[in-house]
Length: 157
Image 1 (cartoon, helix red, strand yellow):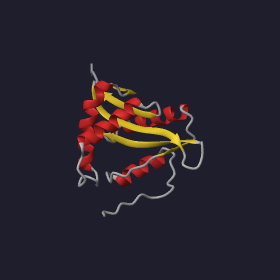
Image 2 (cartoon, helix red, strand yellow):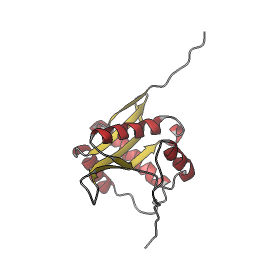
Image 3 (cartoon, rainbow, N blue to C red):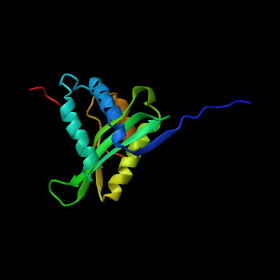
Image 4 (cartoon, rainbow, N blue to C red):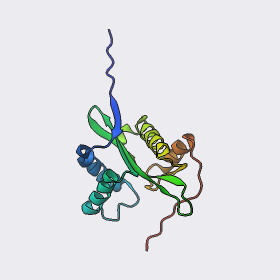
């Protein structure tokens, strides 16, 4: 008889007990990005994380694989700058390198989409600005029904 081990991934809103894991993952994420030359400030990120936990219009969710955080996503819902219409914005979306290519990132994004829709958002704006696997990331995002509507550029001043 063959026994296959099946890893269990649980998706949920992040609890305060997940903060340390998210913090460590964000430090690692930062080192992978094209912004790694800008110092990561623990106090600034702690303030950002506190806002994500405390604001009802903010979203923070984790994927736990066998009890350990393997990925997370954050974002918020707000009025558009020209309308009372709500839009959602994905802020951070990260999956540990060893779990990329799995369904973790997709399921986290779908969870954020459902939350944003429940909050009344009419559109979701997201993408990749990290510079990590941009071609692969863009293909995934477009496959999930997103359309490119512009570009993001960076210039060091």
